[in-house]
Amino acid sequence: MKRNKNARNDARGLADLVSVGWHREAQVRSLDAQLIRSLLLYRKPQLQSRRVIENQMRGALKKVGVGRQKDVGSCRGSWRALHAPRR
Image (cartoon, rainbow, N blue to C red; front, side, top):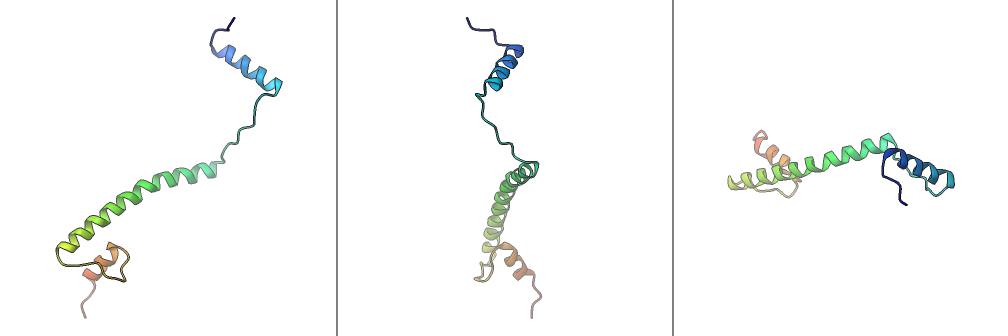
């Protein structure tokens, strides 16, 4: 006959597994590893939104005739080229 599912019976079942040795050790990540992973998870959408904004800026600059220069890696360089003091 099957026992009813409740917290007490669950605890008893887990205690039986531990005493018999039918469990495996679980690895728990350190707090530093958890922090780094959470920062990386927050970083990804930030980079995606930055890429979207850069592409929008590139399109807007292209409309006014400022094309992408070969030595410029991003729109920030195009912005600098637009606002650089003229010689």
